[in-house]
Length: 127
Image (cartoon, rainbow, N blue to C red; front, side, top):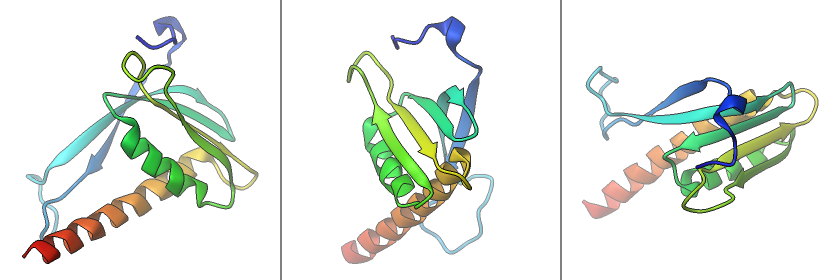
């Protein structure tokens, strides 16, 4: 159980990240879609604090590193008080001229492209 009480939690928001099978064909309705659920703990002009439900730190660490490549991001960190009992949180603080949501979206798109390229290269090497 997270250290956050249910009373202090804003509504649960579901984000989706689509992952298509390796193909040059356009996306279809049958393509695999993975959903990541997250809870918004705090959302301000320059601060975003999200708790990801059912996710490991691994993807969030990759995302954090991509976020930190943005020169308008002051800090991005993954917090998980207890590795079994608590869900990981991603906290982003930006400087002037960048909203944390924008930094997160940009980083997610870049990471998705990196992972697609990695998958293509790996499958090519295995053939």
